[in-house]
Length: 361
Image 1 (cartoon, rainbow, N blue to C red):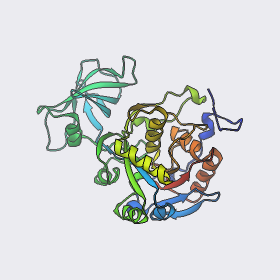
Image 2: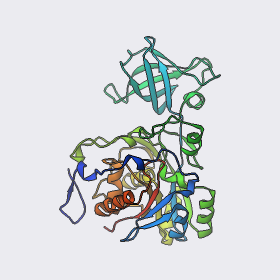
Image 3: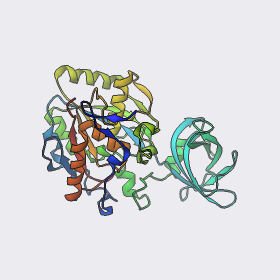
Image 4: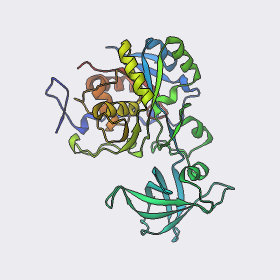
């Protein structure tokens, strides 16, 4: 099945979502101040350069902003096989019973049952190790299942907090630092489980929240534990052949009530980040408020909830490029990206933001 815009005969393929990005525009560090980043206002026919601090003035009393309150875990762990080979694990999901699902980077995969000695934080030696149980989520799964344990019997979240590293994206070239511990996390992060930050929300600080409150803009939260798949480019030219990664989400009752109240008063639903869009539209499409989603939003998708989107700039050929193109129009998005590159906007997780409105059906 190909992806179409409604009312057109335009079919889209992977190559349509590619673009040339100068390496110098990939942000390696956050702006000095969270809300000090730039905002490309793409809600009109002509884009406008703004500061992120201008965002509240672009919204209306009665609008509802929906944030993803997931918390990034220190999901990257390093270890060594009995043979001396180096191992890197990226914990994708905590499964229960001290089991975790993880991506593994290693020159030669260890045998099932092998135990890997993991590197402990300095001064925190406690016998941390990982035992390989097999693949996940099934025998042919793309990632691996481990038991993560130590001498004290601590749970995986405690072990990652003590020994793990911030799972910075692959395009950030430096090792994690104290700055990343603070800034690769939203100021309202609550529910641990993400291996990537909901980056559009990284721009929000108490000053912006105070302005939003003064404007009469309401706030609500959902949870989507962002997986490492968010950084993987789509690899099939035919979009219908792409296997979308799975992520766990939850739309709590109080948020469902806030959305209903917003609709009743004529307000707009403003999603902060593509993860909030994926969560809200998964719920709207299925009626399931909590579970796993593999929703793949491409041009032609019928949005049921989200009216306005605050988002960062995304990787070429990514599913997120397809999502924003579906939301506000392919030609408009590609034009905005060209303008952003020309104007020197900073891209990706630590980069600048853009404001978009939903394309009329």
